[in-house]
Image 1 (cartoon, rainbow, N blue to C red):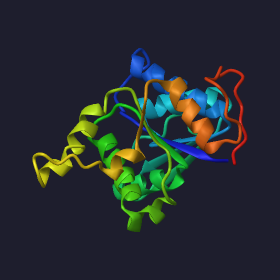
Image 2: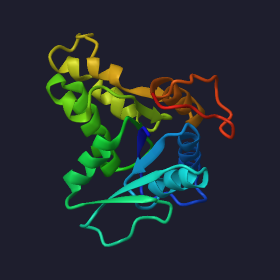
Image 3: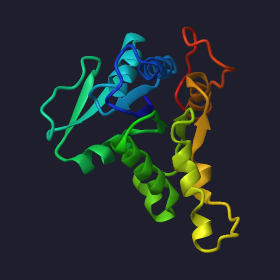
Length: 203
């Protein structure tokens, strides 16, 4: 079974729109017959695991012994790591695709590391090559816009395209993310899916 690693904030609670978005994402991933992997704790990690679990999917939580709290109750398979760097690398290594939801510095670190590992050819083998890296909504657009300015550090008039920008796909919503995941990870390539009926077979 192929796996989608989902990164996102630990802060949102059930009544927030972002939690509901992550819940829908987890459900959509499970209905594609793909496993959900995340950091295993609260917030958007809980929501995406819950969505997948309630849809009958497999959920993996990569936790760290530095924190004493338990994995959320929607995690079926817990993977405990000994350090924070090991935790991030385990999350990345397990993913066949990555979806980044809104978050803070921890989510930013995860996004930056997986993005850089795929961007540098000598490092890409660490993550198994270039894989889908999806960002839902406009939350991370300021980060993308900031990094896209790098060529101007060499020349204020530089207009060089950065290959790193081709590694990320910004999608509008969960439905659009599911379409990309289905096209990239599954043999079935459905139209915009009805998630209660969508199924696909991993390549």
